[in-house]
Length: 154
Image (cartoon, rainbow, N blue to C red; front, side):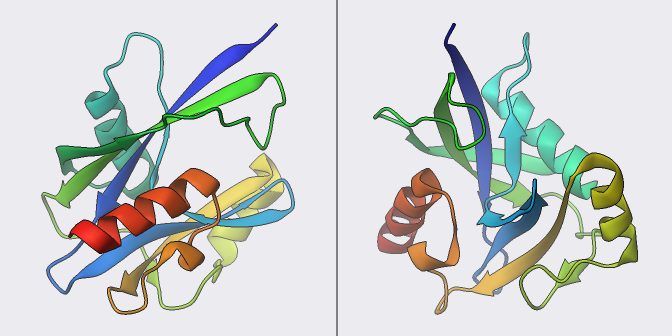
């Protein structure tokens, strides 16, 4: 049986023209991606993104303009029976970010490593300066497409 896995991600650019990314360690692999996650049944896509920012960063955001929705077949990297559909929006922080921000990739603290020991996944967040931001800075194929779009059009 095949399933659709709908993911919703936010591109948050701060007042210093830096782009927020999530560095994640999942099932023994490292990924740099945009914050967000899976759509739950009964939830709208914008509501999903706001919930994901709250769950992951304890951050209230305003979900802005739609950027991109996957328009080609993308198989899940984690489950060969799932087709991924990703939806991207701009997001704006409505409050000061309280989650710890790192200055280098995959700089997990003791708490985050303890989460990994329990759940086999963990994440941390950092900003990338606009000059350094590019498709090469993110891992997932769809994120690379969106990175190029944002860099060319923002």
